[in-house]
Image 1: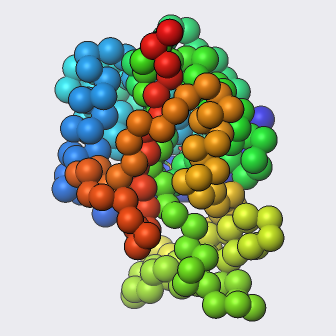
Image 2 (image 1 turned 90 degrees about the vertical axis):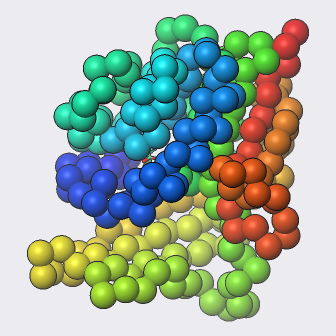
Length: 244
Ligand SMILES: C[S@@+](CC[C@H](N)C(=O)[O-])C[C@H]1O[C@@H](n2cnc3c(N)ncnc32)[C@H](O)[C@@H]1O
């Protein structure tokens, strides 16, 4: 099993520290997008966490099954109203199989990058393809690697600076590695959490989809179907498993 970077300490503060991402203005367009693609079928969330997307999607009548490595994150999900309607399997979403087939699989909030090797990311696409019914879709929401704004010779980029949080990304360009360092002010003390990612371009993800027998159906820069352009800093991509 890969290392669990979302243990008790992270899970305890996850919803609070990601409060912006729980804003209905952020969640609702994502849930609209995913509910439409599910089309009445079941959905598989990779890295379900504390249920930020799964709970409102389930409340729309979509049956959601989640996979997550972190018992602590899932325990937080289980405390919330409506969680009883959601199935969860503890495991690595690159390899863990669950029963049933799905109209939709989705992996949001940069979580594909939590798989820190190309092999694991490729394996994730194969795993998703094995769970999808013909015509089913796989959706990823993640950032575009920010290499255009990284001057030659530099490896650090500040992505957030406030009185309670400083976020610094550390790039290992040659290896597509990225460590996100979060300095957070918690109860008057600065705490540091550093989390490793593998940054991956949209084109490389398309190739992984192709290796798993899926093809790109749509790519947007956000859940409201904003156009994806050279300036986009993130993307919402949809790959489809062939119907036959
Ligand atoms: C950034 S959180 C996102 C949680 C939720 N999807 C959301 O949008 O709020 C990433 C989640 O993915 C889980 N995760 C990371 N790598 C994983 C892996 N290889 N297998 C299963 N879960 C993983 C973490 O435990 C965590 O709950």
